Image 1 (tube, one colour):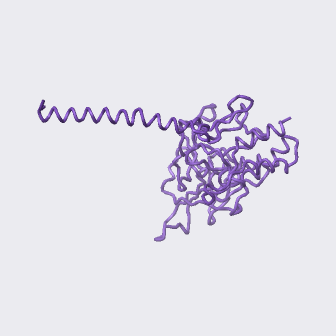
Image 2 (image 1 turned 120 degrees about the horizontal axis):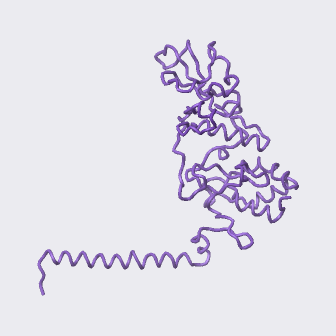
Image 3 (image 1 turned 135 degrees about the vertical axis):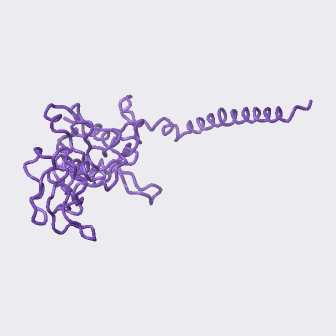
Length: 302
């Protein structure tokens, strides 16, 4: 029986739909599932879950925090890399803040005085890095200072006012403001004067956009004691690894909390350090979850 041309086209479309439904909707998913059941792949297909005494402790490929109910780091455990999404797989992602994000949006002091949070306030990427570095330095007993950070743990950034020359500089400032230090929150700005002009702290609500933004490097070491992965989140926010350098500065604190020798902790760090991907990509890294589980098995916290 010969069908009209338009009916033939519809039947062909229906046949294509059925064929691709069987191939892509049934056969392909079954093939992928079957491949995931192969020896050596089944664990990864199920999320690389790590169990301790029959209970799931986490995933070897997703980071997690090791903090107490108050949010403070547990001293007997190695700490993970910061996460912009709180280690939530459903909120995976970076902060989307770039290196030029150096000026904070200051909170309303009236709300702070009332014990309320200002939802419009926002820390710049620089201040986040400075604050984390200061906190890690205090926790690990190392120098937490780093370039372009104030001793108080915010970005060391000035707004410099005055006539700008053709090269964009302000050689003779008339006013200088420390943008990330709010009036009333610090005793004095991180730097007293700039080019002979007294530095002011920032006032909430004032517009400083006409000033020249000048980050101040300061005298912190160019190579900080706190490594970069301790103060910056990964692109996914789910990185389960830390660098060997970050692990190294945590050894003494963990050893003291568990009452063991630092060399015993270093041996476990080495056992849980992975090499470069394919032997040449990236850097060696330490899986934090596996390391902490190994610590609990070998040297339970007192």
